[in-house]
Length: 392
Image 1: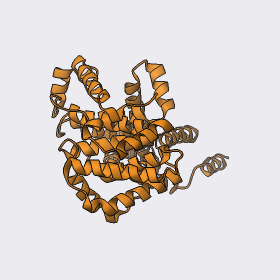
Image 2 (image 1 turned 135 degrees about the horizontal axis):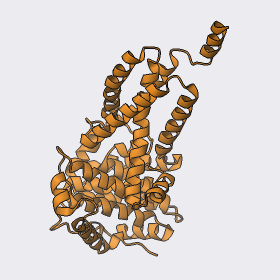
Image 3 (image 1 turned 180 degrees about the horizontal axis):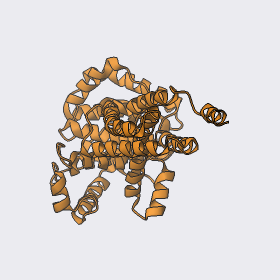
Image 4 (image 1 turned 45 degrees about the vertical axis):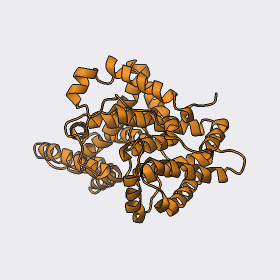
């Protein structure tokens, strides 16, 4: 009778290869699918955190993003602990607690394209260990394990739901190919920035067919986001990009500048593209998150100059796609000639290269009075850029 009961219980368990297979597939997913970033934090999650914790929207977005990332990394620990569930606990526990953080950090490394910085490293290790301990505690309770895994997978997939339509992807690709074909004739420096902007929006105008200019403007911004910004913009949009042209893209970025700096051109167009892919707030959250990472040890330091470029790029995308009137107005404005000052304000006097400790002590961190003062100063300067203003 006891043997029969045990056999019946064992028959409800998945086969021995089930959890190792899930672990392998999930690690592949974590390695190659963009993890939930501020761009991908669903608005519902942001609203829930805002309501529960009564914190600001930017803080709610950051918290929801961290939670989504932690869910994905914690599942590595859960799956790994369940993969060796048949080992005695005194053997399984130390093995899982040693291996899980290593696997999690390796997955982060592959996904980011660089070794995780301090904050990313702490999140990866902590989340993986918590997942491992949870998996060990629940490894004999199949119902609890099923509920937990389903919940964590669903949350993580919810956070990676960013994407664009096939029509927009096709038009962005066509715009990009057109720009790349003539990019070799562009001048260097800020003049190249202006010329490429003119060419992209001329192409958008030619493809508006006298009706809705929003769609071709979005395609132009996404193309410029990949060419002058970062090829991983295409990855965030879940669209492939030709690897054969990566070196070509990098060569263009090295010689095209904004305000004399190619890094500002990259900030501008990545933020503009992310605003098209998501919305204004999420694009700014990405920029702020990047600057906070730079402020950590080993980073280049928090930069209000970079933040200005992020904000200007976001505002450019909004002014180009907010509605039909704004979209057409942007095409007409650019057709009459591009003045850099209309798209990007002076950054004189804005500090940069601020390390983490100094950012906290001198500026009060993100919520500090000096940070807020400079943020308002940046907004004031951007308001004076004529091309970034919107029509009601």
